[in-house]
Image 1 (cartoon, rainbow, N blue to C red):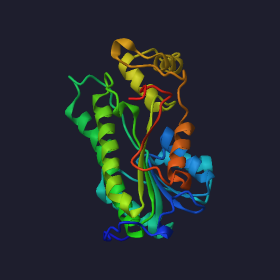
Image 2: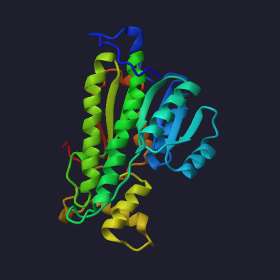
Image 3: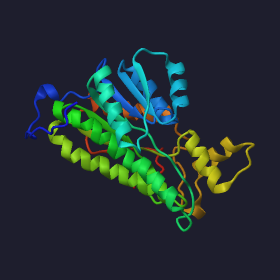
Image 4: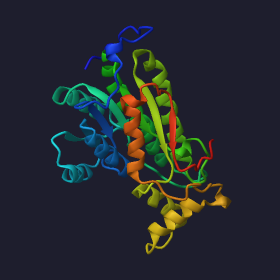
Length: 285
């Protein structure tokens, strides 16, 4: 992987502007052991891509490998808070699998709580993972993309980055920062034909959603999933949380569909875009 930045041409060479999504393209995915990250891996494998799936949770990666049992799936433990861990993984991916054509930053953590009582260490952890992790991974991967003048980047954000959420000050602000970082990166890389976009899910059927509502409301364990879904769909007006106009919780696979589209040649003219996949919950904000 080259660490040198080539001079930016006014118009990229046509042969270098094809996006990821072709057979055997290598796509680097972070947070691959999570609900959305795992769904992204599955969707990418269905396109015949080579997927380099990373996560800090080795057990989750082992389970991912058992689910898919594909020779096109490559897994590695990576801590996105650690620059050396990230840089080594990217170098190894390109050496062992091939040049990275696509990047999906699907990692993230949530710590719910009042802005008045948020602990310093919680705030720092959320931002180091959700913002710093995106920066470290994108920086390492897009150096090679820039040298080749080819590639596409998708960061998984959140609709909470666009609309203030009661009890989610650390998470929402970190996702807003990750979104803006990705768009700023995209401005720099667009002249090289590299597209950077954001997919911002709303309430999605993952462990993170259940954890967020459980922390806020402490419902009983019995019926937790149903209570979470009902609250998310209906909204909580007293806490300024709007509901979901489409009346349903997203499935991780629906988010993965948006990601694979943005990586594909069908999205060749989409750049610097924030695609909300939230059933209308942000009401066009």
